[in-house]
Image 1 (spheres, helix red, strand yellow):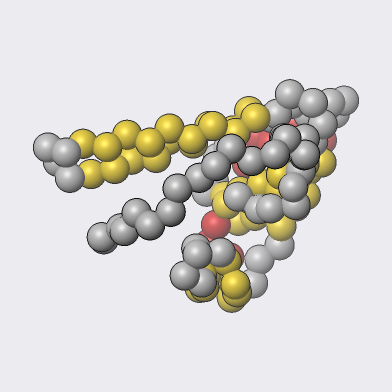
Image 2 (cartoon, rainbow, N blue to C red):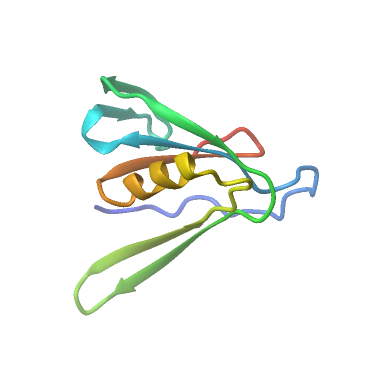
Length: 116
């Protein structure tokens, strides 16, 4: 896929506080078609799925590392999400253990109200 570099970026004003506000977990198999506009913004999703919201405060973080190889013509994205969940109960630990055993889709809502 060809990409055209057509814009730069200036340093934005420091008028917001960064961070992750919520994380939403949903079963990956429930998604049908995801439609995006020309700016890669999601405009519509089909399928039947339920998303479960986890509110976050504090030290949660999201990092994305991009690795490209000219020799192979490939690009890989490694994404790491660190969540700090307060007052864990046996029920919450059991649910989180279940999340690790099957494929799930995660949506992050950051403090500027954008979804990643």
